[in-house]
Length: 294
Length: 147
Image (cartoon, each protein chain N blue to C red):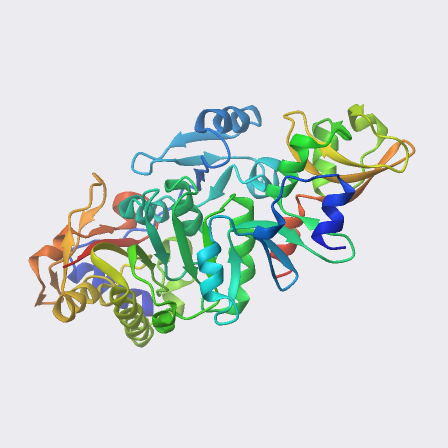
């Protein structure tokens, strides 16, 4: 059995018929730097066709004959090139101006900058990036997007106790095994061992993060993978080991989280999570969960 | 060149230097992040803290934020058309045919290079009819690519 057949069979067991997809490129308007109305006019005057993403507050699909990643409007931080589903976790976290927010796996900074946007550059965001070689991308994007309320640290979330702080809201956009929708070679590069390894790392990150979340605080967990070991099964593990509950996500888009994974019955509240099957949403594969600490 | 000399060069006085900290070669304004700085400095590897001002090398490289603040105060400016804008952010000099307006810029002066939307694109130096590119905002991309 080929690697692709292996994964397609798994999706079938989860009730889904695999289909290839062609993703539409998308961007997020950065209202810290420009109004939505003004950037739309600027881009349309350049010949860029824009279409609102129905489920992402500042998201637009675009069609352009030239690269948007080198024009002045990009360099001035008026928008961030961000896949539409990737715009969802911060929207679900919904950070406010008075919050102290932790972004556990920050580079390249798309979601940290989105958190700053939601907070109008007020409050504070602590961003962690474990890998030194990824810090430069984070900093370039924080500068470009006009993020002024961030403290970024080159450190592993496993050492988060050193901060001696508790956070109102935490984003764990976890490193994951990815998905086929934006990587044509994905099936050839992945196997179940790699997925289980990612799942282990994700649990470690979640355990560290939950410890520094204030009581009644909100943690949003997201991945860009379809594999249940990195999604619903991690949520089951979280429910089994910590005083937390899952909450509904206000988003009229995506499918419910799975509560029966390869014959294993999970906590019913896991259905409150959202799962983006690419052939249904025309996005990359995605998973998002909203967790509240009890 | 460090931050102080750069600000003196433009006669810019609106930054409270008591709230400026240095992280390696970089400068940050920590007005809204001072508590974090005091708590973390020397103990954790802080790589960003508040408002980024720029970094020092032969010439001080200002941040986008600082360029915008300068643009609000500095009168020496050159406005460029869209062709000149594109070339300038690609690290090229501005030729006379791309200049749509120039204010208070004598030969050999440093000046801000501005597009038709009054957005500052970087710093130039007038050398007769040409504005030599000293720094432009395309530097973000070049820095990221050199990562």
